[in-house]
Image 1: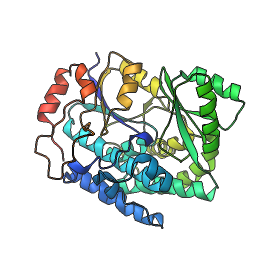
Image 2: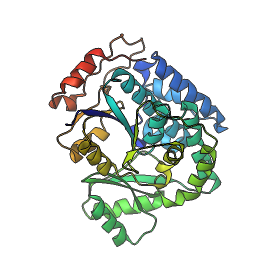
Image 3: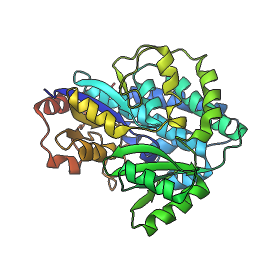
Image 4: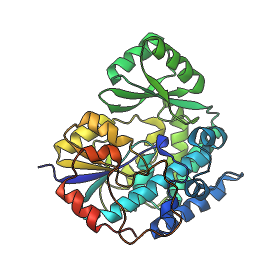
Length: 349
């Protein structure tokens, strides 16, 4: 019986300027932004505060932010993921069985479920960015291809390059590759010539690549000094294909976005077979939900806090009862009875 609900926490492509404006007075959002802002001050140079980016709809867009301030971009994605995950888990606390992070969203998931503090999660991301600079890691990129993973691997072999690696297997028909910026550009040209639909994600940072092994080593040493706790609800690992268990695995989880690919398709398939029938995306717009539908067409998928991109952000406190309704694309699927009850009784804190 598929009666379990999982919250999905997206990664680097999910940042939306001003995405938390309407929740600026919700305590869990206030605490999250305060902690991540404090961590940002340790960067050592002037970067936009994550709170400014997430509370102001006129803040720099993803491409502009990633090009100018890689650290600020990562911290904004992280803080947004922590806040949205906490909002959903609080509103649907009786329904949520597990939390699943995608790429850098794994770090957000750990912080939102209490495995690490919000401050420490941000510090570990900053440590990764510092280590990239110390080891001379240049600009990188992520490229989405509308192809199954096996075909993408064939393209990599045909290209004869060791610079491009599979970063994420997102669905049966979508794969993401990672590599140095120039190599990603060249691979995109080759893929387009082969009539493959590609999309360059808004990041100039290298993720999910073997070149980051020394960076991961540095972050692991810092993570060894961080206190890890048991989560308030299980955090599912796409890499391990099960829930994380114990401090050693949590410490490894904070470097997954650096050196390991994300087998998202396999994770969703396993979760559904284990009884997860509903997936709630923790973000301001649908993203991972589309991938879940492509992988598990019978699953019920919602983005309860999705925002209308044309609506002005709210600056006054939300009413006690949040508007936890599925986004327009999701309304084509009738929510389950459990989803309706949660929408009627959810509370933010």
